[in-house]
Length: 492
Image (cartoon, rainbow, N blue to C red; front, side, top):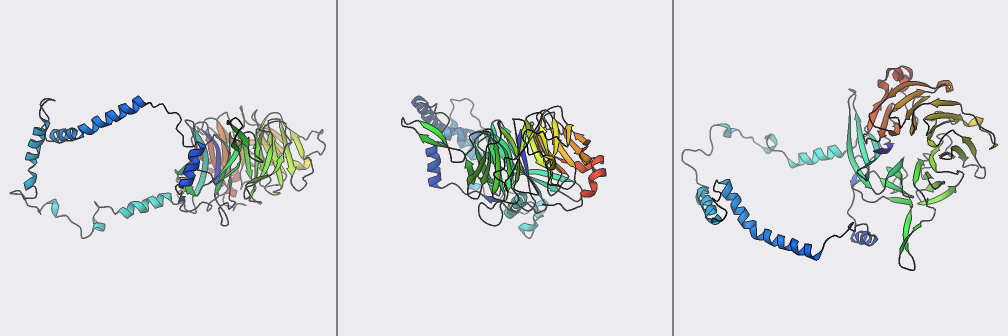
């Protein structure tokens, strides 16, 4: 299954990603001490070891005989019976080869004939049957090169109890043909629940290419996407450490500032690039400084698990959070003493998103398949007063797991659901209408995301584990109503 999807902005990835260095002796020793390289179980016994040694000895003793039999068999001289002399057969076979006179020319055969043997080439470069080793290297380099015009998608996939990140390259041509392939992948230690791309330069330089992952563990792993075959994240926020008790038993202890439950939602702040917000099953919202590797703020304004967080695109100090307690809360970092604004909803929150085209509007998707839109200008400061939604949309028959605003076309919203459908909505005048619906054959849809660079490309992932990209402009209703936005430059 694919549980989360993130687009990497064009030009953010290195053209030729580096290959991870092998761990040092000290790092390997540390991994051994921590038990990371321990075998799951040692079922061997001394008897088994002795049997293996005996088998190896027998195998070594029969190697010469087996080789002799193979040569004899190739020459049609297989032994008539197993108890016969194999060496005699081998000797007869070698006599037939006449190795002593092997280099002598046979009568009637010209070494340099007048037939096809006369076809030769002045140089190896001109011989089509000879391939330069450098060609293989150049082809491999070309396959691994990420061009500035390529789009990159990262999906978090779990298959057969193994979780990993897949870095896909999406190539789009002027002829309209597209090509997708996995560039490289990264094995991760826990089941991924959410991701967030960020460019904070954690390893120097002006920018980076990193992905933060929230999982069933209380930690947040940050991986460098520009390194292939990496085995460890470049940074871990929170998590646990093992501490021995007086009786010598190992007991997990949470790191300072760590979540104590699964990390369900992540949001990177594009303005303050070192800031990452996280939502957790421990009912907390945390603000992290990834450059310093620590938690700066912990908020506890929800009574249930916090499922999602989102920063306002226009006012980067404003943060939304949605919870299983059926509420959405807005906090303004410019007024830290304010309790924030709260909206009650009809079901558990699945996802929420700010409208990128205005600072006042956001939408929230719910477990009952409903989508609600809100205008924060109508929010009531009195917690006992109910703030009504701008619209309520019964979008799906099952949980609406993911939503995504189109970054170029105002009022175009995509929704994905457990009912296996993805729908596109026109939200004009707060009167939503469905302009397209699709079953992408992804199973239950868990994550969707419009591309910032190709705003009408929608990435889709779900329970079947198949990454899909829907070119929504191929839908007549979408191109007819929003097609004029396809040629306009996007705001970052």
